[in-house]
Amino acid sequence: QVQLVESGGGLVQAGGSLRLSCAASGLAFDSLIMAWFRQAPGKARQFVASIHGNGRIFYADSVKGRFTISRDNVQKTPTLLMNNMKPEDTAVYYCAAGGVYPPRGDADYWGKGTLVTVSS
Image (cartoon, rainbow, N blue to C red; front, side):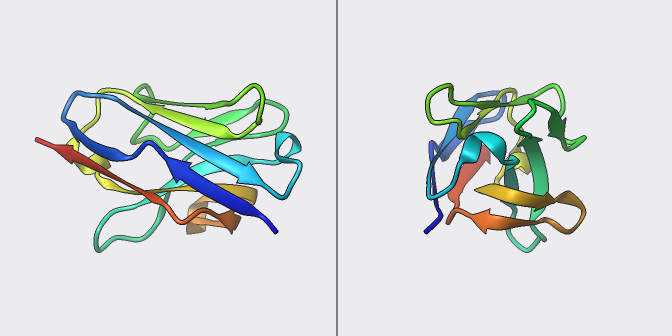
């Protein structure tokens, strides 16, 4: 059974930083695409960043230059370092794995999400 569990969410002031982590089990994650998505209140879920098994990395334009996705060296699961955060980054952030489909905000496997709130 695939399990993805996010941690690291919370409240931060605009301009601040947070690091999200994803604990994962049930698959060989080092060979999979792993990603972060987010869903703001009243909005559709959107792609944030992904890291592929071969190391390729992709970011949404809205977070380029501010967010960094990487893999934990031991667990091979993704972390998301968020710098210079803005109120519009407020959302529930989801760890995702397997097939990742950014245009429709979808993926094969999902965590339950962690809430990130950025105050102005």
